[in-house]
Image (cartoon, rainbow, N blue to C red; front, top):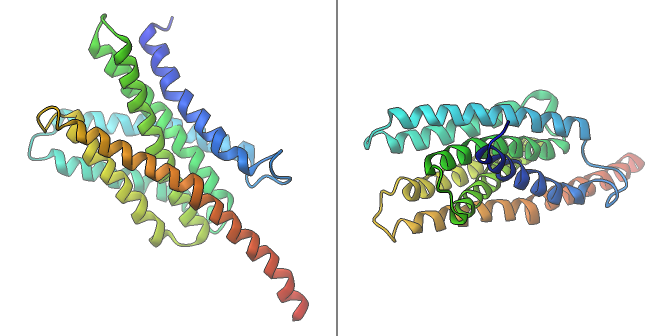
Length: 244
C-alpha cells in the first residue's frame, strides 16, 4: 500500500503536469477548434514515453550527484542539461515528425511526462529525507519545486518541438538549452546551498523566474504564432495553385 510520501509525490508530480498540459492544449482541440491540431493517441503515447524518460533522467542525475565534487559539479550541471535537451531533440527530430505542426504539441506532452516522473522521484526523496516530522511548509516547498520542473521541461521540450515543426532546429534548440542551463545553475546554487543564507534564496528566485518565463513564452507567444503562421501558409497555397 502506498504511504503518505508516495501519495504526496504522485499528486505533486502528476497533478501540475496534467493540469498544465490540459490548460495549454485546450486552445488547440475540440471544442475550441473544429479540427484539432494533434492526435490524442499520439499525444498520450508521447506523454507515456516522457514518463519513462523522466525516471531515466532522474536516475542519471542521482548517480551524478553521488560522484560529484566541488570541482566537477558545474561540469555535471552543464553536461546533464545538454544531454537531456539533446535526448529530446533526437526523439522529436525523427524524419516522420519534421515540418509537421503537431510535433510541437507532442513535444509538450513528452516534456510533461518527463516532468511528472522526475518530480515524483525528486519529491519522494525530499519527503523521505525530511523524515517523520513532515510539516505543511515541507509540502509547500516540494510542490513549488515540482511546479518548476514541470514548467522547465514543458517549455524546453515544446520549444524543441516547435523548432522541428518549423524546420528551424538551429534557432529553437539553443534557446531551450539556455533556459535549461540558466534554471539548473540558479536552482543548484539554492539547493546545494553554495551561497550563505539568505543569499541562496536568490538562486530559487532566479530559477523560478526562468522557468515561468520559458513556459509563459511558449503558452502566450511561441505556440500561438506557430498556429498563425501555419494558417497563413494554408491560405496562401490555394491562391498560388489558382494563379498557376
